[in-house]
Length: 321
Image: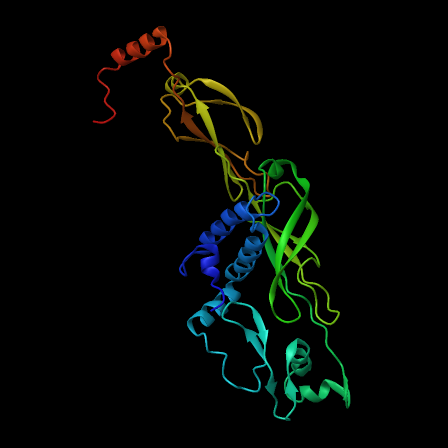
């Protein structure tokens, strides 16, 4: 077996679609030629793009899994089986002999033979002896994922992005096409929503129109921010006395400056929900402020005494009891 796409992405056969996506995103950050310092970054990026294109598509993955389990399933000499997918997921076409004794081989003959449909289709492909009428086929739709800052969700943006799109050449061999596009991202896009770019997918066959390209929007996770659908989770640092006394604070959030009251005796990781302050989608998400209590260092004698006083006042408190 020439390739194993699961090994290329570092996932198991039982990996979920989410696990496959996370593995791809991790590798893409490491090997993208625009940011990577690895010597073989471009080749690595091509490999993981082709692997992800197969494993992220339910039908392609099902076919690929079948061929992993049955590596010789397509090796039989049936005249009607002029093409298929190799065990490594790549398309291939092999020469075969039809009932009329003629050889059909290669990409052009595969579609020329079956283009007119079954039941007399071969005769429909030839208007006169030696003159073939080739049919056109639309290229496949393709899918890619891009990461953008959370600010784009609230403001929208037009960004220049470079993508490496897995595709197949005329010989059925997988290759990667690199393209740079100007993409307008409207505000209010939920994580996981897609933008359709007309005719930016795989090239058509025999003059057929190109497929479409679908870009899935992902928001960059940071130490403070994570996104789930239209909901935004934002970590807020507070002092022990703000958490204990329930004080008012003003903070900068992805939705802008807001004033909130910290609940009295707030706990670490406690969440405050700001309704409709998440991604401004048609159905707005919520903004969740996640409390993170930060304790100051006792660096001076006076500060150490303050902590000692605090300890004396709460001498009956034992967090380990």
